[in-house]
Image (cartoon, rainbow, N blue to C red):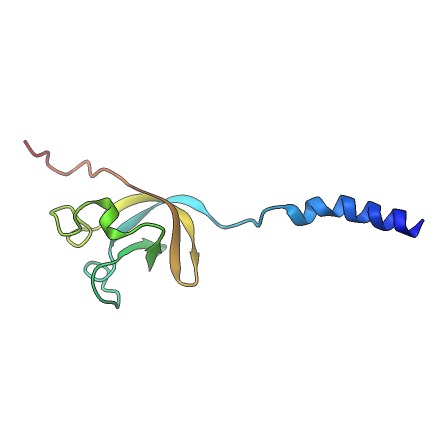
Length: 111
């Protein structure tokens, strides 16, 4: 009888342990730019960073070169851009699962 109760308990408690860990990932619009050039963060070279709730974080999961020429007129080292991102802050860094630049509607079109 004890074995039956123990087996019953184990079988019905397994789904509770198998649930995925809930994370704080959410999609949001943030300021994105070069951490060193625009956000005045410590470091060498040029690294992608985002500003969330007034705090600035370096980004993992994508990099500054994946989004065009960082030193172009509209590049991350020259200007702060808006981006729609999904991810979470882990150990002082933003772990991006998605990162999509939002088109600058005020930017003049080139002919």
